[in-house]
Length: 185
Image 1 (tube, one colour):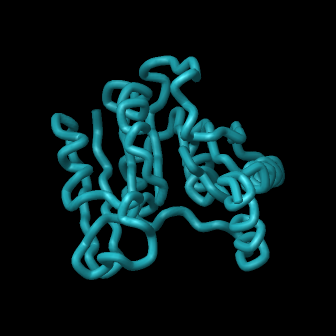
Image 2 (cartoon, helix red, strand yellow; image 1 turned 135 degrees about the vertical axis):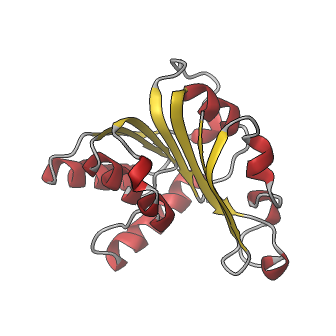
Image 3 (tube, rainbow, N blue to C red; image 1 turned 30 degrees about the vertical axis):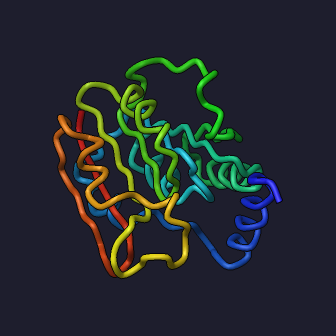
């Protein structure tokens, strides 16, 4: 099964279980730093983060490979009168895209790991802007469980990746097997 079909199926199943997608709880906790502007939500899924950010006065550009997810976000944004430009995009093929350097105040990536996106995300953030990333990482408690290790960060990998940025929040949660960073350029 190709990636698009796989994610369309997953998101269709999730839509039947959820009433409204929820934003990442750590992103919500950090909302004092979220002052509005432009935001890019990569691998946005059903748009919990996108919908939250649009409600915080961001003009959101949401991208995902799933047309099921993108259609859902577009409908929800229209119903709630939110500013979200939702687009079906294969994130593994962004090299040919014409990006404008420094075009976003915030870039968000949650539970999707493609390390080739890191330099793209860094380039897209305006000076003084932020990046929020949260995904799985290789911890002793989750070794060889769930997600393949190729889709898990190494311990403290995000700290190394964003060296030179101002780290406002960093956490490695062993129990949940996730690593989170929120940093400013």
